Length: 311
Image (tube, rainbow, N blue to C red; front, side):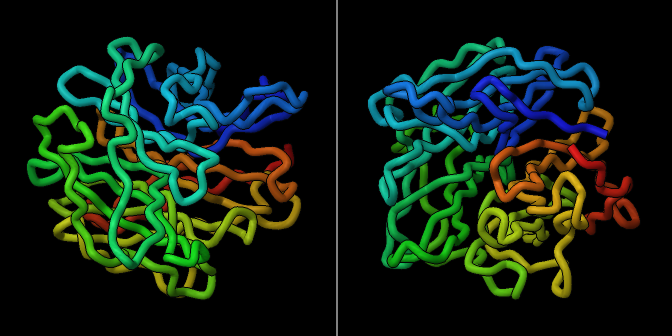
């Protein structure tokens, strides 16, 4: 099984995974918290780890805040490789309803050039509070779809939205068009609580399959799944129970299984990365499970059981 946590901040803590294969290496980008020692001018950052096999991971670097809009921190990355360039979409942190999505590019996986128009996207409309977090991007129907989480105008309920940009664009701020005037997914089921966030998308049989996190952290957060034929309107696939629940008492993810990211390898095998812990968020680990597809179509199923050892 895979369990990864970066302990460089004083405790095992890695959240919000995003995984790509680039330059014949698997790369994982994840959220890193401030240091535990109270140092000044210290905010959230993005960690970088590499792996030869999707199981054993080794830290390779960090992405620290750089632009003025990032001054309080950056986190929750989403990644995609387009025409040989690695694109990272991520959020600013610590600005409340002013947090927004930023963009950077890399040609080596380690060093990133910021988009000069950052932040490149934040939502408008009377259905949200202007915040955009938890970026996930996917190429679909000639566009790059950017899925994001926002909140209702009172800042209480986490909602899911989407924007698009032409695939051939620079993904600057002016290239994005908000593609919804209402949430594309809102909390509905009892286990989803007041939160739908962390969209994790892939394309199967000309459909967009979205894994998502339901409920706020450690509520417990658990993972659901929905599907769309246009990338805009989604139907849930599992109603009675989450697709991936939190673990049993005593297991490494008893407090939650949350914030998914879906990675499809070159051999078409699918892996669902997610975060979890068993101490109500004092520590965070990242794991993954292989996902199969019923009748090789678009309804997912777990191939291997969720790992349940203590950590």
